[in-house]
Amino acid sequence: MHVTPPNGLEALEARLKQDLAWLELPAKPWMIQKTIDGQHVIDVAIIGAGMAGLTVGTALSHLGLAPVLFDRACAGEEGPWVTTARMETLRSPKQLTGPALGLPALTFRAWFEAQFGLEAWASLDKIPRTQWMDYLRWYRKVTKLSIRNEHNVENVTPRSDGVVQLTVRGPNGEERVLARRLVIASGRDGLGGPTLPQFASGIPAHLRAHSSDVLDYHSLAGKRVGVIGAGASSMDSAARALECGAKSVDMLIRRAEIPRINKSKGAGNPGLTHGHLDLPDEWKWRIRHYINIQQVPPPRGSTLRVSKFPNARFNVGCAIEDIQVNDDDSMSVHTTKGVFELDFLIFATGFKIDWHARPEYRILAEHHRAWKDRYQPEPGQDDQELADSPDLGPVFELQEKRPGQCPGISRVHVFCYPAALTHGTVSGDIPAISDGAKRLAQGMVSLLYREDVEAHFENLKDYADPELLGDEWTPAPAPTPTAQAT
Image (cartoon, rainbow, N blue to C red):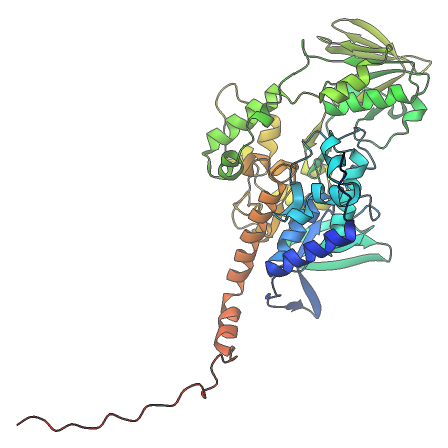
C-alpha cells in the first residue's frame, strides 16, 4: 500500500503565505488614526481569543483593520478545550472548514494532513478535543494577531465621543484602553453564566458543581455521583467521574426519553446560514424555539462512553422533587422515580443570558435592548433564553433599550452564542463561524468608513500618485485650415 508522506507544517505555512499574497491579504491599513487626550485609540478591541475571537479578528485584519484581542487565560488555554471541556472528541464532522475563512491552507484538515498524511486523515473519525486546541494554537501563530493574554476586562463603558472605554487588568496592573469598536467573543456563557435550578441554592457548594466548573474529578473517586441532565455535557461529566473512580453515577433525566435527533443539524444549509438574518421575527423565533424544545441529543460516542460502565445508571422520567442534605454530607434526592442516596451532584443544566451576572457589563445590562423588550411571541412559544437574547443590528451591534440614553452602545458587537436569535448560529459553533465573522467584519469596516468619510474624501482629493507622467505622447498640432468652397 502506497503511503503519502506528510509535507510538514513548514510547507503548509509557506502555502498559506502564498495564498494570502495571491489574494492580497491582509489589505493595507486604511483607518484614520485617532487619539483622545494623547491616547491612541485602537481600531477594534475583542474580548476573547478563543475560536470566535480568532476568527473575527482574522477577518477584520484581512480587511485592513488592526484588532487587539484580550483574554484572561494564559496563552494556549483560551476557550474550554483544555480547561473545562471533558468530551473526548468534537461533535462536528472533521471535514467542516470552521474558522478557515475560505482559505484551504488554514483548515484543520490541511493542518492535520501536513503532519500526519492523507491516510491518517482518511482513518480519522472525530477530531480529538485537545488536538483541536493544538490547531487553534497554530491558527493563532500563523494569523499573527495581536493578543494580550492574562488580561481581564473589568469594565466596558460606551462613550459619547465615538469610542468604547475598557478597564483592563493585566500582569502589570490596571490600564485604560480606548477602541473605536468592541467585539464580545467570550463563548457560550459570555453574556451570563451557568444555569442552576432554584433548589441548587440549598446544597452546600462542596457537594455540587456545574458541568462548566473547574473540578478535579479524581476527588469523586469512591463517591456516589448524580448528574442532572441528558445533553452532551452531562454525558461527558458522567463519563469523566466514572473514569476517575466514582463508586456509581446516576443520570437523573427529567424527560421520559433521551432526545435522539439533532434537529439543528438537519436545518444546516447555506439558505439558513445566510437567510436567517433577513427572516421575519416570527420565523426567527419559531425556528430557534423549536430547536430549543426538541433539545440537542448527546453524541453517540459520549453516551457509549458512559454506558460501558456497569455502575452507570440512566434514570429517565426522573424529575427532582426535593433534596435533603444529611448530617454526614450525603444527600437524599427525592425524585418521581424514588429516592437516590448521593454524595455529589453535577448540574449539566446549560447556560443563561444574564448581563447582570457579569459586572464588567453593568452599563450594557441597563441600556441594551433584548428581544423581550419589543417582541411578544405567539401563545405557547414562550422561551426565556430567546426572550433574554440581545436584539442586535445587522452588524451584531447592540441597540438601545431607550433611544438617546446610551447611543454609544451600538459600538459594542456581540459575536457569541446569544447572537443566534438575530443572526442564526454563525457566531459560536464551528460549521458557519467563518460566515459570521465575514459578515461582522464587512459590516464593521462599512460603519468605520462612513464615520470618517469626510477625512477619507480629503485623502481622496490629496491623492497625487500619477499614473501618467506627461511624456507618454506628443500633442498633435492644430489642424490646417482648408479653403471654404465658393
